[in-house]
Length: 327
Image 1 (spheres, rainbow, N blue to C red):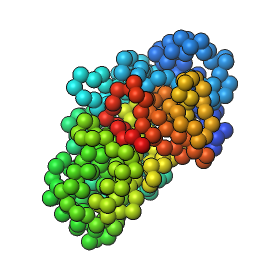
Image 2 (spheres, helix red, strand yellow):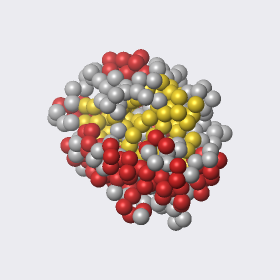
Image 3 (cartoon, helix red, strand yellow):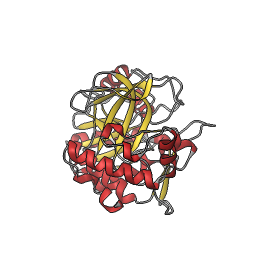
Image 4 (cartoon, helix red, strand yellow):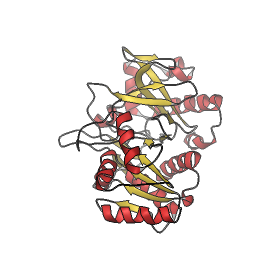
């Protein structure tokens, strides 16, 4: 049964998504002890789950306190979230890196096309300090797929970054500058930019590096500093194997195997309709070997058509490195 569940990229419509999600729920209820215990705790049995919205969402905090796994093998890697000193970090065991690679490569292609069309510059200084950061793994793989000689990682080499982007702009080379928020802000403090062929994509993450920004003010600052019309963004986290992307205005969209819902702030088991702010729940069907059904600590709004916006975080939630912006 597991092998058929790894074909999440074949999902093409809502009916196929629901069928796949229900099958994955049955599988993870049987094989994931943490998820099964949670379902038992809330008195939910598979016999009662007939539709997509009846599937229970596991609170994301369990990734900090337990090994959330639907597999008995030794993980190939355990991705770990960022955190300030003393914080408990989330851990996500991955048993087949090919699943993660398939998810983020196909997701990137859906929104941006073939990586070989771009030079990809990754400005991820805080993440590069950790060997098990899922964002670094993704960026490194896309850099390899890019095959452009100037693609690569940057720490604090501002002169080199400025020179490289200047050369790429002169060549009219399509480029993506993927950066953690505080590093992009520092880049616009270091230099004036006028980027015509470069997509600036922020990944969130101030990680205690300075004041937290309102998203609109942050993007206005970056647009002015880089000389671009829009700031793109990537929405992902350690606990997921898929990403959503925004091409501007903070509105994110998911690949076909990922879906976002809003839960009522006063009732964690009530899924709301569109245009109501609430907690963000995510189904990521690429999470075959952990848990695909996650109730996050983010607040947001889901719109008609599947787009969503992140508004901030629950007050009681620990600040996490992957997304600290507030609107």
